[in-house]
Amino acid sequence: MTNAKQGDTVVIDYTVRTGDGRVVGGTEQAGPQTLTLGKAEIFPAIEAALEGMEVGAEKAVTIESANAFGPRREEMVVQLPRDQLPQDQPPQPGMTLSAKQQDGTTVNLVITEVGEKNITADGNHPLAGEDLHFGLTLVEIKEAA
Image (cartoon, rainbow, N blue to C red; front, side, top):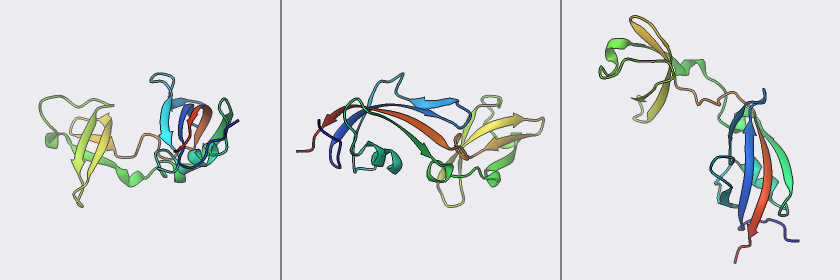
């Protein structure tokens, strides 16, 4: 049998769970994902786990939060005056806002609380601080030329 190696294009199925078992991603809805090993298209630990696998093989891989979406940072939770928000739609928990940072980059904020005068918004990635547990299945290998 052929084993996956750097440069090969592989097709995988996977499920991603948090430490409490909550499913937060995977290929169940959209179908298998295709990627080329060595092109940094997925977490490095996943690429490393896929190397050497045969079609049909399964592996479990855990990626610690520091190597996934980083730690949760409380300084990314901010209070904003409601009068600074767009007036076309009243703010609701779960809504996303985009804001420019001082360095010119854009950050997405998710509204977590709405008060009379202020809202609380969180700029952390939704999976920040979470270890991610991947269940991988190698579906196909297209060998590099």
